[in-house]
Image (cartoon, rainbow, N blue to C red; front, top):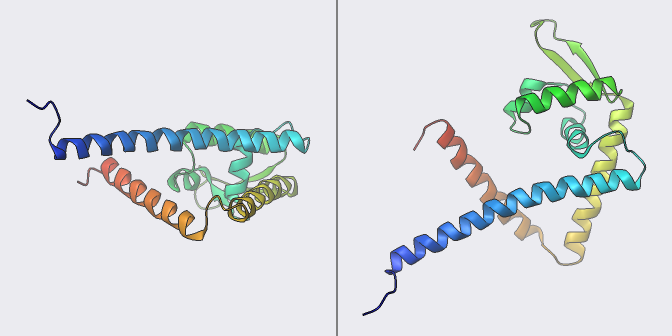
Length: 165
């Protein structure tokens, strides 16, 4: 008598195992990205800003945004964004101004100092992209496949939050 699982159950167990591995990898990659950014800022001697704040400045770029817009784009959690925006304004990396129409809303944009940080992160990412491609770690098709797959998962999770099955 065989103790093997039926093929369908094996496939499902294999998919679940792969899914959990992918989730753990995404989580590890995010933490590793923050460590890479932190190391770069230590290397260039910018010590007062943390990796999350540097990434926030990079993501804002040349835009003028509200904290709500950053949350709705899916970049940050609410309290995390508010705290870091406040700190970045206090340290002189961002300007803030009350919105003329909705006085409760504050719009933020980078100062020249904030743009310097954004440029450091941008240069770091450019070096990484060149290194990944140049050393054959991944090519344009591979990066495109990863992005497509992650966007599908993002869309599925978003639908789950909105109760669309």
